[in-house]
Image 1: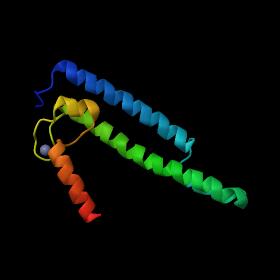
Image 2 (image 1 turned 135 degrees about the vertical axis):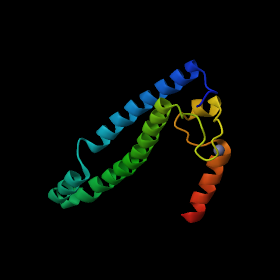
Image 3 (image 1 turned 120 degrees about the vertical axis):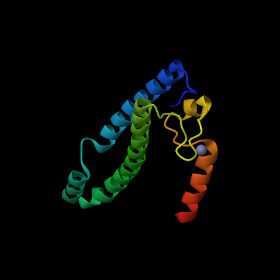
Image 4 (image 1 turned 90 degrees about the horizontal axis):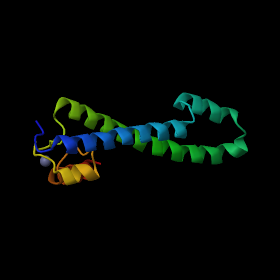
Length: 127
Ligand SMILES: [Zn+2]
């Protein structure tokens, strides 16, 4: 159990996560303008070719942003699930308790600072 967090701290972090989740939901909806990727591809085919490349570039930026937001949304949802399961705030690498200050800055943090650093170094090496 993540007993190092008080009920008040957990409530605060949960509120921050829920707020972030809503924010990301809204932004994703705005970026897609209600379009799925398939519909978007269809729209690109049908428009004026002179406008198409510029609009496509704008869309690409939106899609890249959406990918980031989707990933973050996944992290936020996973953090909320961990909260419900009583596993929140424990490092996924070494099971250490992640300090409240780190969680306050990044409520969806999966790892302690040491493990996050090691994970990112490894990710860079395999990339
Ligand atoms: Zn760790």
